[in-house]
Length: 449
Image (cartoon, rainbow, N blue to C red; front, side, top):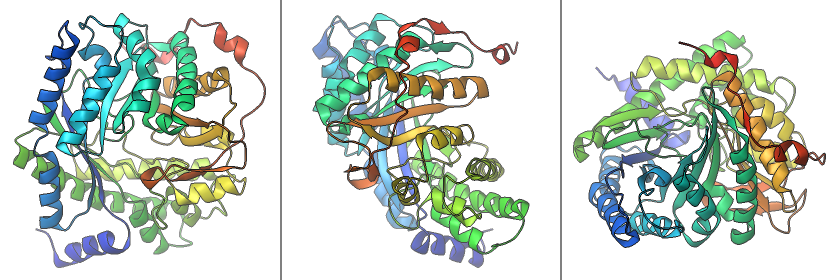
């Protein structure tokens, strides 16, 4: 039974500590939409998304109003377009992106994910066509998000894909003045049930349609930690775990309710601590509450590891359906504390890379100088993919080389994307390494059978 105290605690978390449901994401399979004719294929995609997601936004708004729980985003993810549209007899995949964008606007979601390809072990013709289309697709659409998985623990790292994605990021930045890169993620060990953008897609192992929910709550964790200031770290970890439990229970309630009302199976709750640029909604503030003078200081990686583990422990106690990424995100432009530390020179790309060994994703929403070479971008992707491959975890890169900007400039992306200082990149060239191509073989720890 829910007690009065639990109700009051939840009200306080929502009203004063920035607790919200970050997203309700409906996954939709497009595997039955393939057709040799482009127009027929696009029509089938549009019709299926608008039919399946017709009531998604209204349902989210109804739940938000009735339960008093803020639901920030309503989104759709689809089968990777490189798979769904491979039977289409065309060299140009931009029309598929335009169709996704049109469908997203019709149903009212703020983003649609799945302009994606899975190339960890090699390319199909559809994969190559999709990657070739990414720069233009992300420039001419507003709500389409794209992702490419270039490596996995089981397959190793496709270094030809890594090299190609460096050029793709660079070209996307040039065409879109950098903004398109905010909608593009390069993964290693991408998960099939991620509700968060820009990396969401509907995996081939998923059902026909599914509801996944992403919760948030860095402000709630930060507030809870203030109550145990100066206590040993194991005490702090227990506080984080109990807080994550409460947050996850709220997420499961919303997911079950949305699933029931829409007549769609409930998939997972992703309990990631996803920050926003709002003051008081920062993962960096949590790390500093644990005793660091600034995020980026020695001890940051250890503090983040403890936070990530405690969040996961609390989540799995609260729900049998925890999935997605589930942990702590460290996007530089979307976290007020990260912005502050990066602007002061206390948080560098190298330190962020070390932190990605223990966080939920990777190098996220980092602004780079506009003259950063494609090979350097590829090498950053390769480093992150290697961390994910060896450690059997998801890692990702979402970097934004901003044309005309240099180190120290500040770029404002607007809304949830926030603002970020342009960060320095090591000037030593990795060009010869990247141009070797081929594949980094899977590690020995991939041999589990």
